[in-house]
Image (cartoon, rainbow, N blue to C red; front, side, top):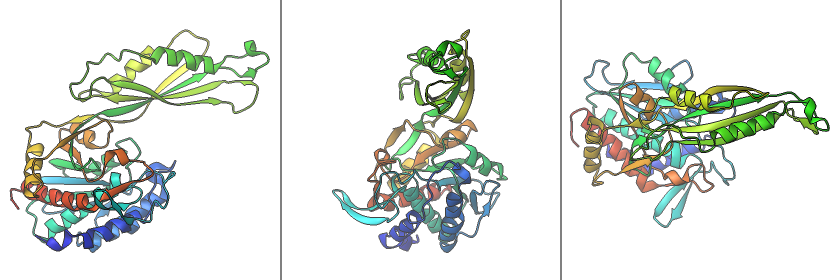
Length: 387
């Protein structure tokens, strides 16, 4: 095995270079120039330096690197993410300093607990497999997503492939445990249209805010018609935004816009969940109420005794980490997209979930090194070898 790659001396500088090239979420989402520049000017450069070639770009600018024979018996994908949360209140978010913690040295910076440490571990593992003569096909993608809450980027990548992978690892911080199940999500956007008037004569208008209140009342505590899940419990519906206009003083508002977050349990269909909420909205008032689906992500769940979990348990043992542990993820990413298409996929990576978007985001160096070995052992196991 290419042991020189699995070292603090090699991996910490790689992670630091990734963090020091900011790629934060903006209103432009996947089209943000900073995110695209991270892929082309940073990630692609590091991938080439590791001997993995130049890859190619799909129509959205996602990077695709395909290694091994196209007709290999087994194909695995590692999906990594360019976009991170905004710097927010975090000081020196892109310094990527090595700090001391109670549990060992760590790298501090925006995205290390969520996207960029898992990317570092994946690049290292794939490079090691390549140097040691991998027996199957590995697809590595660097996606322009990471914070968008939709499957647009991975759908674009899969549309550009001649052959879908047989299984996929979604490289994201999961406390170094296997995210074998996660909720999905669909946003529901509601627009209440009224008629503006001077607030001294409210009867001359139609108050959109009052219509929004009626919508909130109708959806508050709504029985979503879904049985509780033994792992996740009940499905949830949460208001996450409210806006009104016009932005003028002393004016009855003629538009009020609401957004709700509907978390989906494994097995639920996003379209059915949306339709249920739409049909529960009040009818017959003086306002016009329009309801539309927003971004969504499918829920996911893989069988505990299925092929992917079996391989991953063996990989943890091969890496010297003992029995693999699982984590239940209330958040969603692209594992559900693969599950929807009949492909086993899990979320897995170094980084603590509780640190996502926090002011003190950091990752233990030892966790990064361990996960690189797990990824590497998984590749070996997937292609019928043992380390």
